[in-house]
View 1: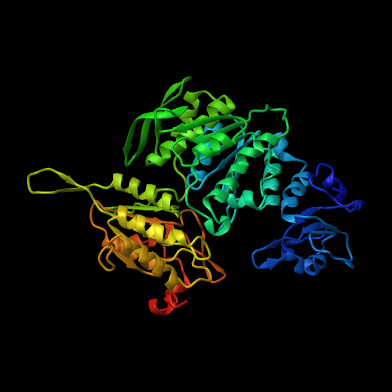
View 2: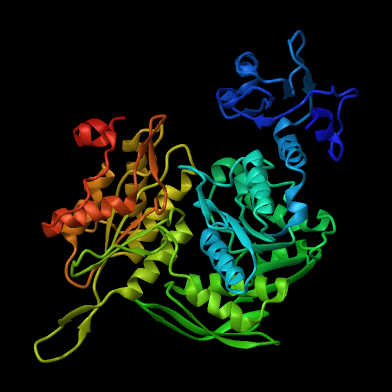
Amino acid sequence: MLLKNLFIDFPFPIPANIPDVEISGIAIDSRAVKPGDLFVAMRGGSVDRHDYIPKAIENGAVAIVGDRELSGLSIPYIRLENPRQALTWLAAAFYNWPARKLTVIGVTGTDGKTTTSNIIHKILVTAGIKAGMISTVNAVIGNEVLDTGFHVTTPDAHDVQHYLAKMVEAGLTHVVLETTSHGWAQHRVDACEFDIGVVTNITHEHFDEHGTYENYRAAKARLFSSLEITKEKPPGNSRLGVINRDDRSFEFLNEFIKTKKLNYGLGDFADVRAEDVEYSSLGIKFTALSSDFRVGIKSGLVGSYNVSNCLAALTATVYGLGIDPETAAQGITSLDGIPGRMEQIDLGQNFIAIVDFAHTPNALKVTLEAGRALTSNPSPKGRGEGVREKGRVISVFGSAGLRDKEKRRMMAETSIELADLSVLTAEDPRTESLERILEEMAAGARSKGGREGETFWRVADRGEAIRFAIRLAREGDIVLSCGKGHEQSMCFGKIEYLWDDRTAMRAALSEFLGIDGPPMPYLPSQDRKEEEWLKG
């Protein structure tokens, strides 16, 4: 494609006389540049990629987009006000505007985005719709599943457009796109032409980047304002906002959304609501109803928060896409589970072991509440009484370095209040001192009456922390390893080490049971005495 053609439908001011240069790709990392690429130089964090323009040219870039005042380059340079914001539109044009050929369902929220995205995708497939999905776990294009990376929120703008283009090429008609506040704040999905927007909840997270709850909420709300600018599409032009009546964001979003909107919730006043809810270790069962339908729902997912996620998906698909409620219910039932979301690891132990992605205060709260509902000790409380005693909830979790520091205290407080025993450990400390992170968490635990060495412990190495929690477990207890879920790496310093909590749980359980199993994944904290590693 000619460079100048990328700017035909560009929504921002551009310089005159864009040259006729043939572009064969778009890159934002000079190391990834291939001959014929357009290199988009962006500023972010501690890196200014304008500094790598010479390397991009050396690797074969044929044109550069940036925001510095530059001259004397050997190839064309286009100066724009905001290259990061421009990238999504340039990529969409390069791939011939794929979102305009698809019905796009966007899902955002603090917790539950991936689960809700998967439920919606399953409903679409059950309804016979050719649908793809882009989530923080993977991109699903027909029968092809692509890994979206180690620590990914929304993929970069040019990657999103590439996935959408592959979906169009594969003959898909719909896509479910999980979107994060980072994705919206960094304009990665601005050109995705959303038809339906869904929010799960907006709670405490990412205040390190957004500063306040109001700013964080505003970033997520861009999904709903984007519905107003989506161009008309041949498949239809449904514009629907789906919001959570039970969430603190409801009043704001209910006023903010200018398109058609519906809400869901567990209360009587929600447009789509649940009644007769039953919870068990096998999943959830309830009746979903509105003024138009009443349908029974069964799911292998657990916890009240997954009732909300199911209601969100049901509202979006029934009212936004016209799918029959019974078909939607079948889709929900057919979903086996979500990787790293309340995923049970069973090697024959007499207690429950679960890996979950809960990495925010609210997510940890609802996960521990769900865990509490799953515990039961088969041993009688008193001889001959036949009373079943509840098992204990044992939580293992950390709080990431270089991220919102306030949630370290909040998560520890939550665990002390809702779990019986808490094991504080590493979760991507990055370049921060793990000792300081754990001390901040321990202070939160103490503030709620936690007693170190009795109700909570600090175990810096995550693998050893999981082992320790398993050694604490008794029959009927539940061990919950939270914060990593599906993720495939952990960051120490500036290095991502291969790490999977599910593999670690299997390794620890197999050691505990004396059976064959995988080795514990390596982390650098294994090579040092705990007191040495804690000093950073």
